[in-house]
Length: 208
Image (cartoon, rainbow, N blue to C red; front, side, top):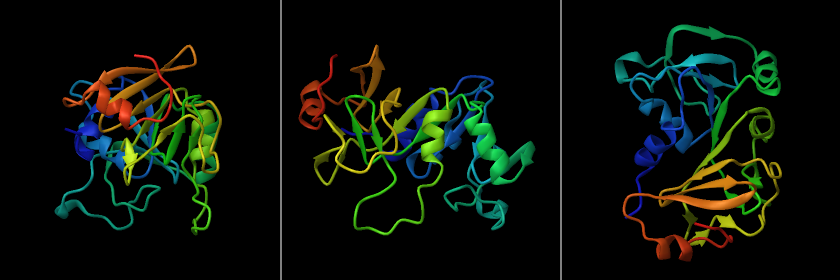
């Protein structure tokens, strides 16, 4: 049985460590803000210029002026700071972000990622992913294992690449993969998923 999006986000949040500065991408990654482990203090950063993001707001705390890079309404923790996007990207490019969690349409067995464009479809822009995957010290991909029954972890990405050889970990609704000495390695099966199920849903070559 596959994890729900919320359960996947809970697993991703286990990668947060005390004192980390963390950037969460659009989609499943943003849900991890609700599941920071007890006793762990991290500073969540949004590339549109906020450091100190809190959990998603309840109805009584909605502020339409307070949004993340994905245009979702958010909360700010006491001590949060606001700044322009140039300073935000200086923080990212200066390698002051310990961890970024991003979604992806495809990841290759070599750690390549495609997550910004599907040919023929309109895109608003490439966003901050290209900076984050080379600026953050650890890159975690949080995504569903398949899309419409087709594998997303591939021998080689078919979509336009965001970056080459940058992914450190993949967390899906079925399993966790890590790149160990450059080798795609299955390190966890999640929520009762079986090895044969993961194998059928994965095109890439990997070791266990």
